[in-house]
Image (tube, rainbow, N blue to C red; front, top):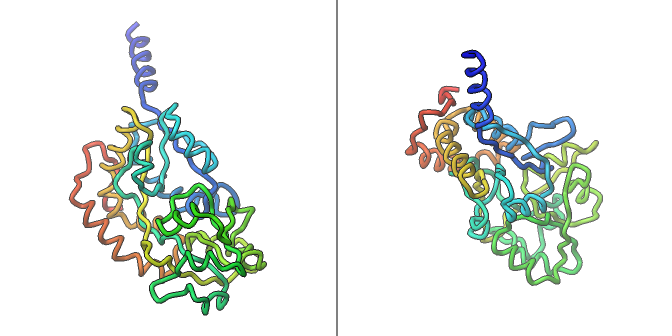
Length: 292
């Protein structure tokens, strides 16, 4: 009888573990769902370390489209989380945000060397995206269902630009679109374009220019739906982050797909986040060893 009671208590304890559903998309090199680098995306690797620091939850993965991901946060039917989300006041109405989990290169304009170098929109401080997008002789492409800087948001709302919405994946290769001259420029993350280029039989050499007036670096977070479990998940992430940001393995995963020049440009942003998070003390249930 005693053994049976203990077994029941053990089973109940396992069942009581809160469940987190981690939504992920086909978003290389941040999340890679197929091909030779499957599971080796930036957020794939960071998530592995975060989940190891959160043993009090049962973790599940679910592949969704970007549109479906946004829909699930709107509906709030179950507790879901996602890693690598950019913060906005609008998104904060439908989800909770953690402290920063990573910094990366911000969206930029990618193009073939020399293609747009002398274009009037190319200014010292970056690309005047409105001027570039109004040139009828050019064709640009961008990924829908994303958070864009104000300069891009205003442009997309107005319409009438040379930009076309695309669903970039490993199959619809954004670098290949440039290499075949199907488009003249792509608004994308530099490391994402570099990943696409390396998938080609003959990689395409690309140049990048920041969008004038927008941030050079992007700061991303874990986001979870509202509710008790979501709040507990965000709290657990925040407790783990101070130690993780001091871990060489975590930093290497964060910067894995960036070229050396991009890494150097991001060093001040990485240092700033480390300084801010060091003030937060890891909780007693944090299993991450800061010496790793």
